[in-house]
Image 1 (cartoon, rainbow, N blue to C red):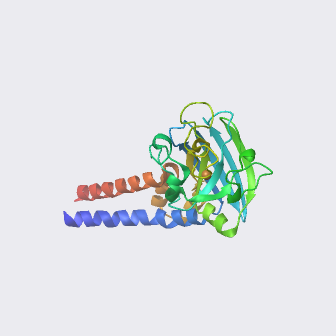
Image 2: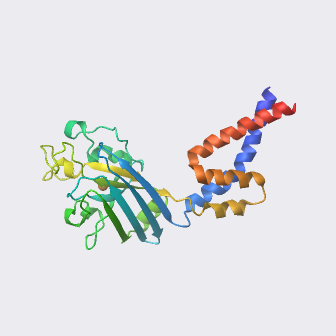
Image 3: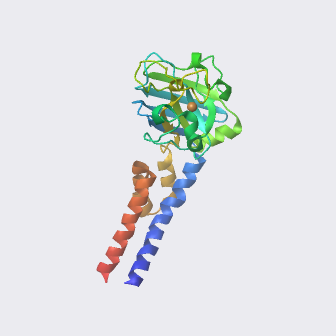
Length: 256
Ligand SMILES: [Cu+2]
């Protein structure tokens, strides 16, 4: 029994070794420079969105579509970098109105503002983080701009460390930014104007991975495992590999 199990694990390692050696290497390099993000609501804002970015040298081309935001109000939007480079969850509480999450409450998760996604002619560095006049306004928007960043930021974004955060939440349903709670970013503003409404992690797009799969070549196993990894993502890949190990163990038992 023990021999069988060890043999099963060894077989799993062999099967796993091929796709893993090729997959992450090509993903980390992010040769295509493309990233995508699905934005989901924070603070029960009802907002959502999608983002796509392409890093080419020091140029970051970014498109961002948002829905479900407070109508007729400006919405600050940024690429944050730092912390754990992740989004908080919708139910996460903070120091704001009735426990609302304020921007700084989740700084250890998504880091600081690094790129301000303003429209022309707004500046795009962190000094423009609250450049209200140049951010998209309204419940939904389609934003597109190519922004120049420094080497470090370009690398971090390309590596998947960027987090897109859209701000502005009408907690009390009054239809505008108001209330007694002051913004943690600028005490002259109500906190509603700057509280985070939606968040999405910019992950390396998987589109160019099939080429890497072909390059490993030669093995039916790599050919089978690789498309599964692309379609289902890393989490499912881990589950799939567990299944392979189980199947291998079963098969060896049967063979005895
Ligand atoms: Cu932000």
